[in-house]
Image (cartoon, rainbow, N blue to C red; front, side, top):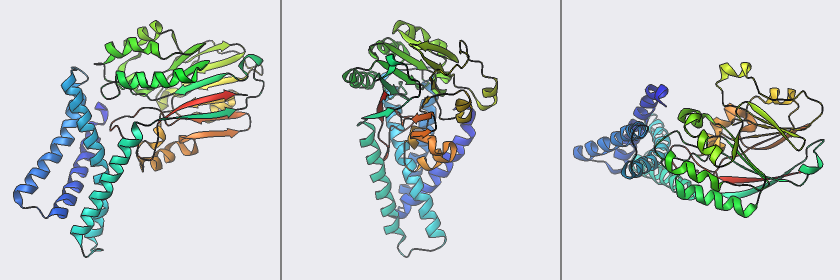
Length: 358
């Protein structure tokens, strides 16, 4: 986030302007009202960035609650901005005769989307899919794999959230639990508390983890010890074969480093089925060249907040969410179970994925 601070400041400046114009048009404020509105909007934008930065160095209960409040307000600001820009466009070209009514409708719609996003966030569901894999070993047939991704444990999604997710997983009684990245949110403050609780993420046979970009921001070295204590196998550009199924876990690498990826312990391909764990739904052609039978990914959050899904689809194409089968190759990209930034998931339910291999 620090690298993109100038861009973030520019975006927030646009947001403040658009929302300010929308709000003062809705209520025709006098000078003092306008000043209070502008000051409040600047405080929300600047406060969110400031608290985010401070939480990387210092953590306490009050700071976390302030961050949660500001993150929610940023989510509301996002939808107000969307309608504010639309309203500014309409008024600039004089396409409406009642600017006040139009502004109020925009605020109502933005608030409705904001509330819907809050509701969706707290009601994740279990999604069950069956996947046929060629040459699947007998020991893997009917095995139940549970995939979770993008928990973003930290200042917003804390211990209660982790326990809720772990409780749901236990009711499924999976043979294998696979965590496809972004286990942590990047803030180190809650790590000492949340790290020991990772042992509640359990499966009958094995729990496997690969890192996402936010795990890398935090630093894998900061929580690798907790993974070992919880008996979670961490695959970072490494392969392991279990009962005839080769499981390949990718590290999260920036684009310029992917061609230099070296995977440890990967076997010579001799017709064995391969399960690839890659945080982002990318490197599809390379996965096919590796004869991967199934790729499990996350990262996109399915867009998290409508209409961001339109942009994630531009980036990742059809692979941004869901199951796709192309010959012997299968890929499932989950929408994830947590959220990043604003704890909102508008028209986008978080999910725990139950996969039955056939």
